[in-house]
Image 1 (cartoon, rainbow, N blue to C red):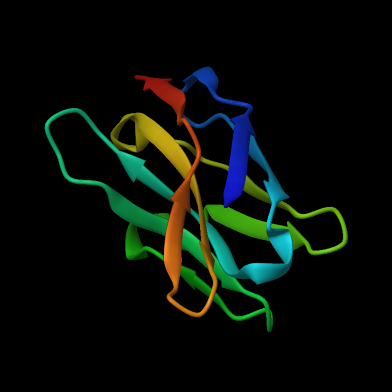
Image 2: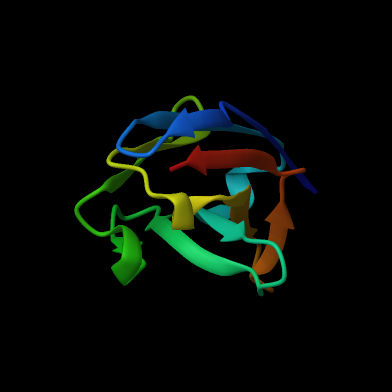
Length: 117
């Protein structure tokens, strides 16, 4: 099992910045990739950004150029720097890890990000 704990959400005005933090514990040696997803009210959960152990990163088109994902493999953390925030970025953000030979998904408890216009 992998446990993920997020922090750093909150309320910010449009155009502002926030950084989300996620720390992994447990069977961390099995982690293949880590990333962030988000779920706005009434919408399905969607990928925000993703980073593999080899350093390959993927971003949703809607956040490219504004969000930056960073991992510290030694500390087993993944952060999401969010700049130029928009009201449409409002959502619950979830830390995600993929681990093991079965590529199991692990999820944090979620942290609310609210961007006011």
